[in-house]
Amino acid sequence: MKLARTIRLDESDDNVFEQSAAAGEWAVSGGFEFSNWHEDDLTGKPRQAFANGWLSLDSFGRATFAAITSITESEYDGLIELLATHFVNNYGAPDIEAARPVATEELDHMRAMCDDHDDNTILMVSRSMTNSGIHESYRFTGPQDASLETFAVHGTVD
Image (cartoon, rainbow, N blue to C red; front, side, top):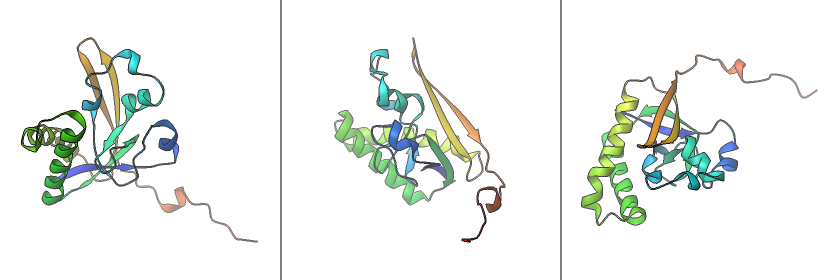
């Protein structure tokens, strides 16, 4: 079973999101956060979160990129409970029992998206507001076979 974790290629997420996610947090699309938004809400940092932010399930911050990795069944079940609790505490779900199926659906959607891709595949999300609601599209970039030399500069202290 696979899911995605947030990754940080640089520190730019700290500058573009109101709350950025740390690297390594489990992630879902999180488009539900914008379900009652209108064009007027899409300004500044909230616009950036709407346009291309993955929602982390640890800090509930946003990240530009996520990467696919394996997840255990018990970790997955824990995330369902965590997200269901978030729905109760932040979105008005009446109780965990009512929130659990919605949280499960959100995580199942993310899992289905990740299951057909190799580990370390990088995910990007793009959202737009349409007359019929929010449209999400996803892009996948396969893991690269780059060696350390591709990124490291070797030299001496002299």
